[in-house]
Image (cartoon, rainbow, N blue to C red; front, side, top):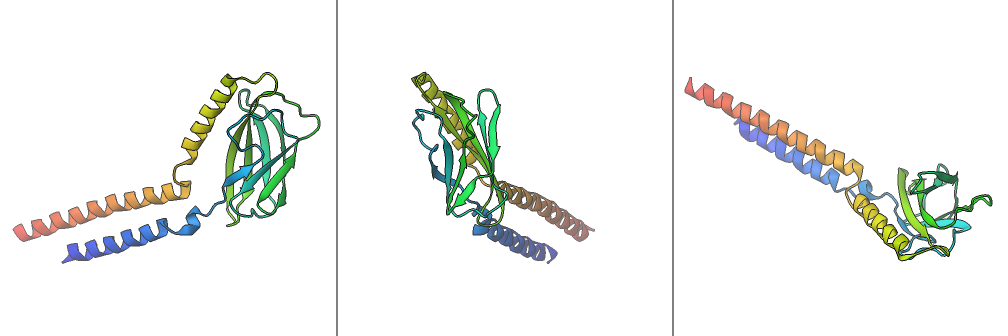
Length: 187
């Protein structure tokens, strides 16, 4: 009798957890869908301004871009971008003239859902010294970034881990109750 009640409670808890996991708000963070550095081909020269287009309109304030040389790890500059609808744009300071190489625009924005969202977009500047080797290494970096960003959001991962832990604990409790009931019947 207790086993059936425990099983019903477990099933209801598991169902509620699955509903919470599939709620659209958990997956609503804005993502980069375009911009002037978002393409497969290397740029001919370092841009004078960097624009990223997001899937929804980010909120004002607390938005930051940082541009980094991916080979050296040196931060070239960081700045607060201006917001124009779904686009965030930052002007490259005049004293920044990095030339050909591999770079990354790191961003932290406040998504349209109010949550902080971080990410990065790699890009390559070929310039006159550009070659297929630069483009190939950029493609490898793009593939690695795509593999990193293709998983579940971290909140969903934690929720799945919590559900799994709950299931294990519930199974242990139910097994213990069944053994105790079996021992009571044998006594």
